[in-house]
Image (tube, rainbow, N blue to C red; front, side, top):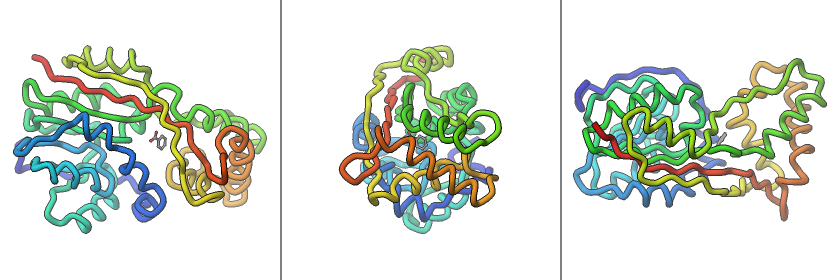
Length: 262
Ligand code: BEZ
């Protein structure tokens, strides 16, 4: 596929309003990965999992030609509305097929959502020109560990069947670097760092977060069961994750820079 022929696919539903209103930390805390990208004027850059487009716009400010893609049509609709001069497309990260077009592929807070990392990494490599770079930040091994442990306890306490879903891909640094090497990348930077993340909005912070991101636990449950589960998760999380009137989620970020080698 050529630069001018980016295709449209996907149907993931996200609440883009809630994302922008209550979860702006997702892009506001992205300074480090933007620094690692170090976009230059004239470069062609793919922003993979662009959400409502705020980081795509930052990359464009550096003078790069950037395309933002996201699986969610609602996110893309809002991105286009907010940044009409920029280019956005609905696209699933497992299905990117943009042969050799980009100098860089950038991704923030997206790749932990995809449990088929091989497909994503293969697509990223194909999208890059030889020598092109991949720069990403997402949840690494141990990310939201306290929260997930609270979810598991709350699930049992609520009498729900089986065990709580484990929806996210949180690789260790070595696992992810190995995956990149297997797919024709040279890893030039990799760190795994704790980044405790205050959610804001006082007591509402964790319920808001669960509403936005906890679909795997909450979807399909009857209203009353869902409310009880959220209350149990809050109760189980509070000793470790509630401080000075705010919820602080135990994020751990994996940051990588890798170069396509041939
Ligand atoms: C994260 O950014 O680490 C994250 C966000 C939502 C759900 C899980 C992890």
